[in-house]
Length: 262
Image (cartoon, rainbow, N blue to C red):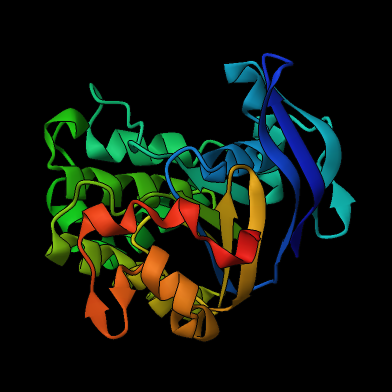
């Protein structure tokens, strides 16, 4: 189990990005972390991955625990070896390298045999990646790059896969293909998934539990089906009010009336 306990994160020793966040991700589960831009979602993933220092961020209180052990002081590479992998927002591929070279970079902790098996696994999961394995990654479409980024993460055979805005900027059909593959991966291999996503409808459809974060704090959590049925979630995240979809202009005023923050 991946667990955060009363986590507090500061940037530049002054800007509080995450405050007193506690959440748990059970083994084999798919869990959604939802919230608006700047709410603290990506910061939480970076805290788990051990990469906060790259942006002058640090955990100043609380803890991140995995399989009963604290990750305090662990390097990013050590966290990868323990089985936690993040696919960052924007994909961050090695653009000048080929698709297959990018995949090989993801398997740096594995043996040659494990790397070979991992590549075949990715190719069976994403046929488009196999078709473009010799192409330069920087020339791929956004959706293809996202598939390669997920594939690169899977090369290390993770126990926990953290996805940061995987649907951002992608066409609906590509989004469906990617999320279908992630769900199949979870069901067939038991990979735990922590999904950060602004498409709340999609995220709550494929996960079993969700957490909603605002201004660095968890403000609501529960089973995904109950969150979808929650009137506030429908209005403020799904754009639905009394069965009718509201305009974006109306939805943007939700901060004035959030009942769960009162």
